[in-house]
Image 1: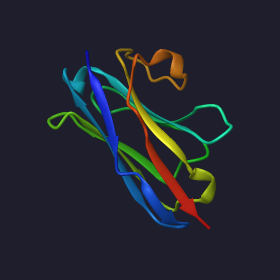
Image 2: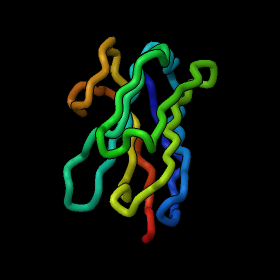
Image 3: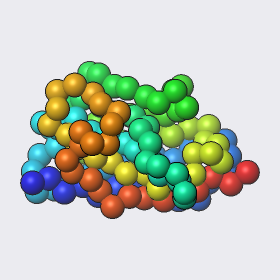
Length: 124
């Protein structure tokens, strides 16, 4: 079973950048699609981005398209989320999740393995 650990969160001013990492252990991440989700206080968990096992396909929520970039390094069993032009509304706990599904999904129900999350706070 794969275990996931997120890192890279923090406090940043609006317009700034952060790069989140999702590192896997226990099992190689290379056979999994990986998604990033976020949850702000009082709100439901929402889809941010996903990438397929090989890195050749990806998907983004409209709210982050053009600002966030997902990528992966299977040799390092790590998936990244580069976040640029951050806005206060991007403030949330960010989670990565893994799924053996071949297709990319934006529903959290499809993902079997989850990390503990990393806090991202964007100040105005």
